[in-house]
Amino acid sequence: MTLEFLITTFIVVASPGTGVLYTLAAGLTRGARASVVAAFGCTLGIVPHMAAAILGLAALLHTSALAFEIFKYVGVAYLLWMAWSTLQERGALKVDERAAGDRGFMQVTIEAILINILNPKLSIFFLAFLPQFVSAEEARPLAGMLTLSAVFMLMTFVVFVIYGLLAAAIRDHVISRPRVLIWMRRTFAAAFVALGAKLAVADR
Image 1 (spheres, helix red, strand yellow):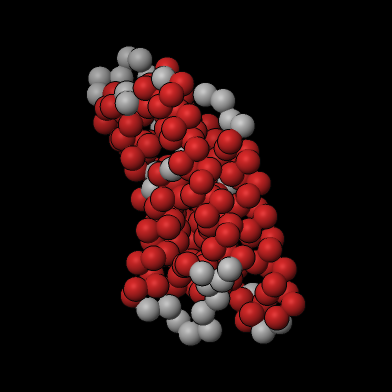
Image 2: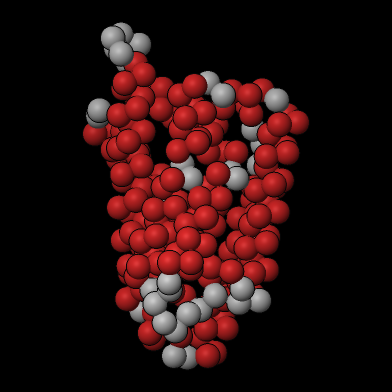
């Protein structure tokens, strides 16, 4: 493992995307515990993409236009649904004055997992990203890929938790102001729509 890998991973993980957006929203609407749950769910959502990259299944999305388009538009539809739910104050991002219960945390986890699973660009990203840091002369390349994947996931979880806790720290200042709350919902909904539009025009 190289310093280059760690720096590149941090830049990729810390860059705003659907996972970061969802974790921030969970922290603002449901508090610190929900933001940690969201970070965990987003991290779990990475696992299928990494597995696909390691097993070579991601190459199917890269070579098959139909498979990529189907996967992509399912992801777009989900992001648009998230935007609508946010505007309507439904789903896991509904503002809850109290601490969310186990059922609420389960909903946050499921939505967070789906946020990352339904993004075909992640599989292709890992297919291109991970092999760059595994030497061709390495005796056990699979073990190397698994190690890099584990480090990537750990950094994802830690960075997302930090994002979420920072959002939760200002939660009381937000939910106590109805006008700010309205604009917050609109902002997150618009961001989900923008990310959906970005995914819709994405090429393999």
